[in-house]
Amino acid sequence: MAVTINDVASAAGVSKGAVSYALNGQPGVSEGTRARILQVAKELGWKPSIRAKGLSSSKAYALGLVVARDAKLLSTDPFFPAFIAGIETTLVEHQYTLVLSIASGPETEEQSYRKLAEDGRVDGVILTDMRNDDSRIALLGELGLPAVTLNRPEAHSPFPAVCMDDTDGITSAVEHLISLGHSRIAHVGGPQNYIHSRSRRGAWSKTLEAAGLKDDLFIEADFTAASGAAATDSLLSRQDRPTAIVYANDLMAIAGQSLAQTRGFTVPADLSITGYDNTEITQYLNPPLTTIAADPLLWGQAAAELLLKYLNGTPAEDILLPAPRLLVRGSTGPVRSAA
Image 1 (cartoon, rainbow, N blue to C red):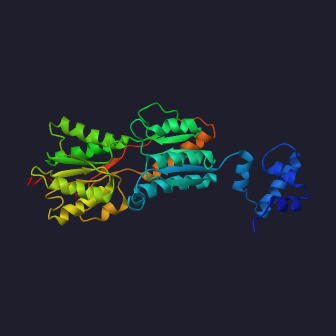
Image 2: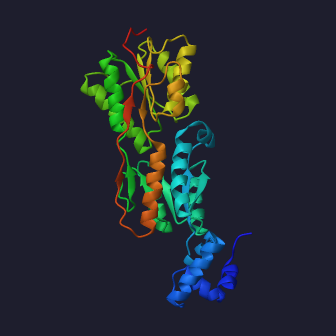
Image 3: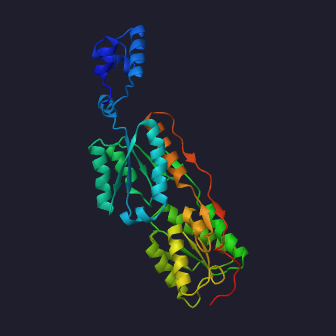
């Protein structure tokens, strides 16, 4: 059984109140008594109760993460498990826990944040997938719930952010394909209400325009494998089909590569493909996937650390993570010809 304050008090020959004062660093006991109590607690293997600590300090010792995406995506897209693992590895060191909520739509999402705040279940939240005119910033201000955002929203935000410039990776991927002779380069992007989806599309478009090429082959998808396959099928059915496709994540790229091969296209002889995230499975595909190496584990760790600092009142300035880099593998090669 767990050692209690009563056990420590009995072994130290003092009152329960004296033990509470000593263990919480409060006045009310002499330094000699405090030292004796701390030594006895250490010898007995006493550990603080997070629940009791939370009650005495009005803290929940938990952070919240509300994911407004299809629940199926969490089990298939490797980004979120790695990102959540990064949060958890940081929180465990500080005796915090993570409260995860899956929201199926805008109303459910707002209800999730309100419930987290009203029930006092979390001390703060991490905001992912920042959007155009993101209403969550004002909502959290209304609820008095501290937050950290992944990248800065377009509107003013009082919260610190963990930032990463994902345009460099997309730019490198498009430049790589252009250097291989490709001129019909498509982009299968994520939902355009997400800031990071628009920034990746913008980088793709600007790089093509700088090379004097058209940016007319864009399809908006939703990051799932099914949408990646459907977008690829649509692009490959065009008379002016692309000879290369840049995908906004690895999951869509993997599905697109499989779909293309099923339809009889050889990768990369007939079609070059690039992904984004550098999930582990990409190096074991046939051919291995050229991708952009982001680090979702690092994202999670940095976000949790920054939010904990913010909650503790320490100056919490924005964190800029290293820009992701292009990893060239077998799924990209010189252009042969467009069908």
